[in-house]
Length: 390
Ligand SMILES: Cc1cc2nc3c(=O)[nH]c(=O)nc-3n(C[C@H](O)[C@H](O)[C@H](O)COP(=O)(O)OP(=O)(O)OC[C@H]3O[C@@H](n4cnc5c(N)ncnc54)[C@H](O)[C@@H]3O)c2cc1C
Image (spheres, rainbow, N blue to C red):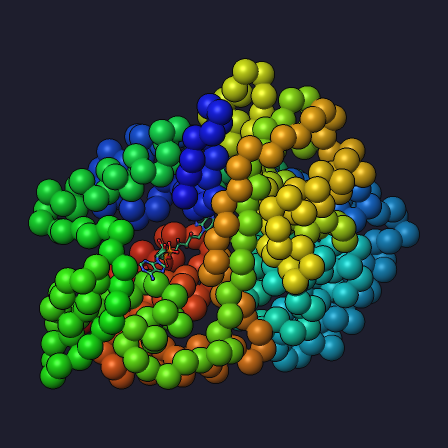
């Protein structure tokens, strides 16, 4: 989703793509429409300092020399203790140690995803979303990581993909390019039709949408699992819940403590999870910068104005911005991320097999109830499914 407000171009994700994403091979010319960006990421730590995300050597030394033996001892103890990784908390402690998990604010960050204690979040979330912890916290990879930190020029050889963002004109332009190309090869799109039901008659499915019937041999669904179960008249799985995301779109005149395109919130306070500075990609407007701020709603904080006040009072208390922040717009998104509790995995498998038995292949972030952090993975999953059909 993207929108132009007062000359500012906001969006709520997918925000970044890498030029090795298969969509750029599928749609020649699409990459050239995108804007290359410097993908530098920062985080706000619980001590109020801003440092590189996810970790940096400077960060370790900034805790003081006395902390280093404690970080290391805690890591050794945690590795020894956590033989079986069942929860996100165990995953994080295994790779970074209990002590560093707390002082670095990693635990706060993960808690903020679902407003849940990481001890109640399944380890499947951690492995889907936090491969970077495994990459940075594994003993086996430590020598290579230290080498790359000491010689960052070598690192570039390993991360050659260029980060890009959608065109300044918005996602309509980006996806419009794809639908035009697919349309030219015979694909028909029907937008804005409300789905009413899916029925199966023998080997044929009848999909009713916008008071019209469509007949098909195969159905692939990427819409939320609970909605497609209901459309097909199948049983519900109430344990499959997703979080609700509100993205605040703000303009800002003044200075910011972080110059990177993304700032993650690892602090204990503030309900916001991450901010993305779009003006780093598309340029300032009338001397103002602009950004989107992702906030996951909690039972206490779920209203746009409440979330905006919470954000402003938190960043002011940490002196992140010097200047006035204005709220320009807000995106509201249900089903933003599937909530992986320690028990949801079983329900997810049952729901998907119920749909499979009915004949619907349900995939993706909402359809597969999968935490898919970036779009390359959804393309891979569709390709795998097509191979099994062939
Ligand atoms: C906030 C956020 C930021 C992200 N940032 C990035 C990023 O920077 N880079 C990146 O690569 N990936 C990013 N992702 C991940 C990326 O969005 C997903 O991997 C990708 O969108 C998954 O594709 P999908 O088709 O499974 O789901 P979706 O893209 O969510 O597609 C599902 C579609 O179904 C539609 N739908 C729902 N209900 C119905 C209904 N009843 N009838 C009809 N249609 C319906 C929805 O509107 C939606 O368009 C981000 C995700 C989020 C939530």
